Length: 293
Ligand code: NAD
Image (cartoon, rainbow, N blue to C red; front, top):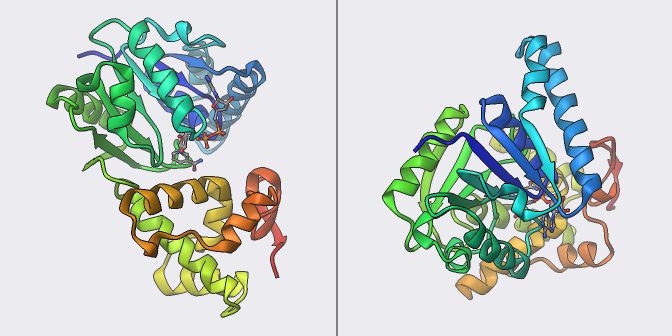
């Protein structure tokens, strides 16, 4: 099935990047967000990102305008009704996502495919809400989308082989590496990553080492480009907590209990990069100091 028009629902951190990679790939992209300011910001962020690629000689300067021209915006879900393929990237909220997928399922033509970029909400639950479970799939991009190669492709209980193949082919056409997995809590990436982050927070909470020491040990010891506490700030501490709660509830295993310090920082509104403070202080999306001592 040829994918000519893509709908991207929610143009925050992830939606921006997802819209950019599809537009660069030649697809027409309809960006939908309830917040019009987010849509204006998304266009600016994408244009700046494309211009950075031009500076690095990874994109020809005369390609920027045609890519921007392929992007349109709407504050209504109906704006995406003609899409062949939709990627939903709205806030990680089960009730909100179910509502959106129910509506999308009724809007798209029958052969249209719907995907969700959710980090942790069961794909089968969203697929059921859409009313087209065989044409529903998880397409989990990594942050930052234009840079990261991995796309986790998550089959819901009733996702068809055809839908899976179309999604895998689409991810490959974007230059990504799609990897298939089944629909169980945290899928694969977050089931492994979040307990690492949570354990790093426990190590801090128990006073075993400081923020920079923990991150340095992880970076140098495991050859990770970023330590787990910095990565937690980058992802958003609220997102990390929400995923830990999905793992805890989904498996009922105490090993997934969120660290009380993670809960406290989220309660205080210190969510990392997006609020300027988490384990670190942040300025212009860069670490400027240690916030938690
Ligand atoms: P974000 O908060 O940056 O953006 C969410 C966007 O959704 C906002 O622009 C908001 O206005 C919009 N939105 C909310 N309700 C809406 C509605 N009813 N209709 C249309 N738009 C609506 O969030 P994000 O970090 O981009 O995360 C989006 C999704 O991607 C989540 O499911 C998250 O779990 C997942 N994800 C996030 C990351 C990450 O590192 N941030 C990585 C992988 C996956």
